[in-house]
Image 1: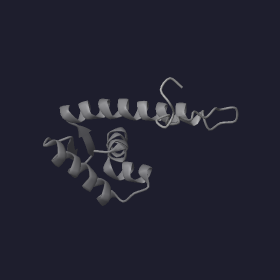
Image 2: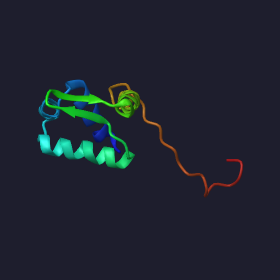
Image 3: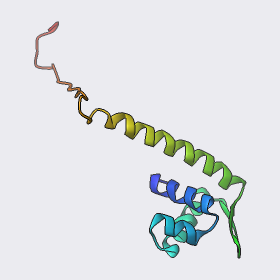
Length: 105
Protein backbone atom coordinates (compact mmCIF):
# COMPACT_ATOMS: atom_id res chain seq x y z
CA UNK A 1 0.00 0.00 0.00
CA UNK A 2 1.35 3.41 -0.91
CA UNK A 3 0.19 7.01 -0.49
CA UNK A 4 -1.68 6.93 -3.80
CA UNK A 5 -3.64 3.88 -2.63
CA UNK A 6 -4.45 5.60 0.65
CA UNK A 7 -5.66 8.76 -1.11
CA UNK A 8 -7.78 6.67 -3.47
CA UNK A 9 -9.37 4.69 -0.64
CA UNK A 10 -10.14 7.86 1.34
CA UNK A 11 -11.74 9.41 -1.75
CA UNK A 12 -13.91 6.34 -2.36
CA UNK A 13 -15.25 6.35 1.20
CA UNK A 14 -15.72 10.13 1.30
CA UNK A 15 -17.54 10.17 -2.05
CA UNK A 16 -19.56 7.05 -1.23
CA UNK A 17 -19.21 5.79 -4.78
CA UNK A 18 -16.41 4.54 -6.99
CA UNK A 19 -17.53 6.60 -9.98
CA UNK A 20 -17.60 9.88 -8.02
CA UNK A 21 -14.21 9.10 -6.46
CA UNK A 22 -12.77 8.30 -9.88
CA UNK A 23 -13.92 11.69 -11.18
CA UNK A 24 -12.42 13.40 -8.13
CA UNK A 25 -9.12 11.59 -8.66
CA UNK A 26 -9.13 12.08 -12.46
CA UNK A 27 -8.86 8.37 -13.18
CA UNK A 28 -11.07 5.73 -14.72
CA UNK A 29 -13.58 3.93 -12.54
CA UNK A 30 -12.30 0.48 -13.59
CA UNK A 31 -8.75 1.46 -12.56
CA UNK A 32 -9.99 2.69 -9.17
CA UNK A 33 -12.00 -0.51 -8.69
CA UNK A 34 -8.84 -2.52 -9.40
CA UNK A 35 -6.93 -0.49 -6.82
CA UNK A 36 -9.55 -1.17 -4.15
CA UNK A 37 -9.67 -4.87 -5.01
CA UNK A 38 -5.87 -5.01 -4.80
CA UNK A 39 -6.02 -3.46 -1.32
CA UNK A 40 -8.62 -6.01 -0.25
CA UNK A 41 -6.37 -8.82 -1.53
CA UNK A 42 -3.33 -7.28 0.16
CA UNK A 43 -5.06 -7.09 3.53
CA UNK A 44 -7.08 -10.26 3.06
CA UNK A 45 -10.29 -8.58 4.18
CA UNK A 46 -13.21 -6.76 2.59
CA UNK A 47 -12.91 -3.00 2.93
CA UNK A 48 -16.15 -1.92 1.27
CA UNK A 49 -19.73 -3.09 1.12
CA UNK A 50 -20.87 -2.45 -2.44
CA UNK A 51 -24.50 -1.84 -3.32
CA UNK A 52 -26.48 -0.31 -6.18
CA UNK A 53 -26.53 2.98 -4.26
CA UNK A 54 -22.79 3.18 -3.59
CA UNK A 55 -20.24 1.88 -1.12
CA UNK A 56 -19.88 1.86 2.64
CA UNK A 57 -16.75 0.91 4.56
CA UNK A 58 -16.70 -2.33 6.49
CA UNK A 59 -15.31 -2.32 10.02
CA UNK A 60 -11.86 -3.00 8.54
CA UNK A 61 -12.49 -0.25 5.97
CA UNK A 62 -13.35 2.23 8.72
CA UNK A 63 -10.10 1.35 10.47
CA UNK A 64 -8.14 1.76 7.23
CA UNK A 65 -9.87 5.08 6.59
CA UNK A 66 -8.83 6.48 9.98
CA UNK A 67 -5.26 5.23 9.64
CA UNK A 68 -4.96 6.47 6.06
CA UNK A 69 -6.19 9.93 7.03
CA UNK A 70 -3.64 10.05 9.85
CA UNK A 71 -0.76 8.95 7.60
CA UNK A 72 -1.75 11.38 4.85
CA UNK A 73 -2.05 14.27 7.30
CA UNK A 74 1.38 13.49 8.72
CA UNK A 75 2.84 13.21 5.21
CA UNK A 76 1.33 16.56 4.18
CA UNK A 77 2.71 18.11 7.38
CA UNK A 78 6.20 16.76 6.67
CA UNK A 79 6.11 18.12 3.11
CA UNK A 80 5.02 21.54 4.35
CA UNK A 81 7.72 21.67 7.03
CA UNK A 82 10.49 20.65 4.65
CA UNK A 83 9.20 23.04 1.96
CA UNK A 84 9.84 25.94 4.34
CA UNK A 85 13.53 25.33 3.84
CA UNK A 86 13.17 26.12 0.15
CA UNK A 87 11.25 29.34 0.77
CA UNK A 88 13.03 32.71 0.69
CA UNK A 89 14.95 33.10 3.92
CA UNK A 90 15.10 29.33 4.41
CA UNK A 91 18.39 27.79 5.33
CA UNK A 92 20.25 24.80 3.99
CA UNK A 93 21.96 22.34 6.28
CA UNK A 94 25.00 20.62 4.81
CA UNK A 95 26.75 17.71 6.47
CA UNK A 96 30.32 16.93 5.51
CA UNK A 97 32.28 13.83 6.27
CA UNK A 98 35.28 14.49 8.47
CA UNK A 99 36.75 11.02 8.07
CA UNK A 100 39.91 12.42 6.44
CA UNK A 101 40.54 14.88 9.29
CA UNK A 102 42.79 14.14 12.25
CA UNK A 103 41.00 13.07 15.46
CA UNK A 104 39.67 15.96 17.52
CA UNK A 105 39.24 18.39 14.65
